[in-house]
Image (cartoon, rainbow, N blue to C red; front, side, top):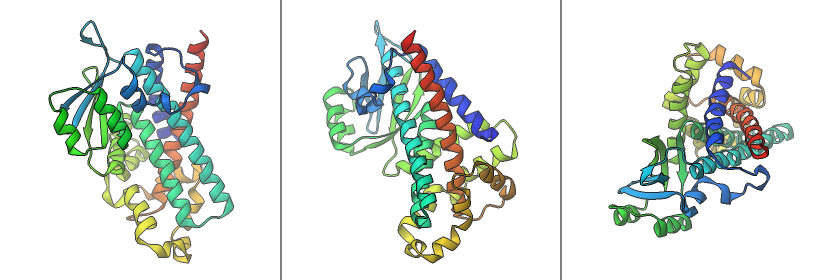
Length: 302
């Protein structure tokens, strides 16, 4: 694991370890969708939801009329949600390695690797208090039955379903991000990288930040080009274009070397960017996930 990945994993572990102290006992082997954060805030009576704007709502707990920051119900929901998400990242990474070993087409391998990186960026951002959230029609219906607030009608007439939440004054404040949840998630990842690595002054840390800051390096744009715009990439042109990308998938040492070689000189829409982000983010999430799982198990046995 490279040093930037280690810093991200440590920060993720530290932040969730603090929630372990506030949450109730969690049975890791019993986690299902019903333990997810969005299921919990829609259905748990201990968690309040207030509609505070046409495109905004707040989630919080209170005690004696005062907001209870990181209350036990929200802490448990966020922890459970991360552990479910960590499992998704781990399984997606395992799928990518099987696809690589089976020699599937470069285009399909890139799309699957992209989703590994995307899922991991969502989980890391959660640990830093930036929560990506998409609500299906039935979930919005459940929210409508529970929520209250001065902008109730405007909110549910707006049609918003994709949100990013941030921790603010003891509450989680969710704002709509339109129809581009992937772009919002990667912007969250950029903010996390800046927060965790921006002051390090390391060339590799700066290169990660550059990759996520530069539209020409956007992992979403790379995925879209391969999956939607360049049908020829599902044939031999894709195999040629992805030669180095394929070598980097599942290759931590190789991605670290790629960062050192290409700092400041990254080619636009280089597929290697997806492999580098997947390796770094997935390793950070999986390392943190194992450590947080151990903390949760220890707390349940205490």
